[in-house]
Image (cartoon, rainbow, N blue to C red; front, side, top):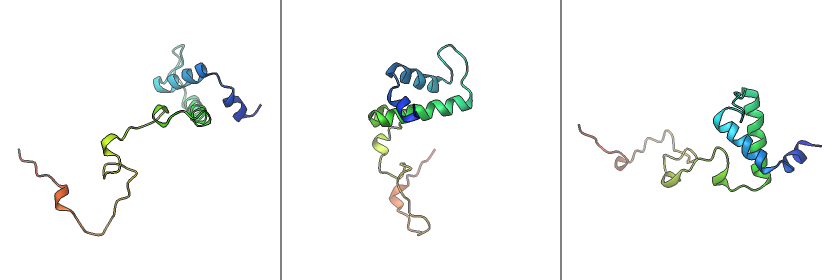
Length: 96
């Protein structure tokens, strides 16, 4: 059996258990996950989510950018560096 076949046949309850273990950093019996166990479990969960078309908002590690999406606060937005043009309206003066 290949890794792909194993993940394809993975029971949803096992997926949820792995996901919870990653989130909590411990197995259901209370034992702490080692860094290697966490890495392997995370790879399996990500592969499962991709294979089973889990919606992006429900995937492990999803960050809701909300109203910041597409703004300068969004790390996926490219910033112009070094052109020297500064928009003075982007700054707010705070007085104490």
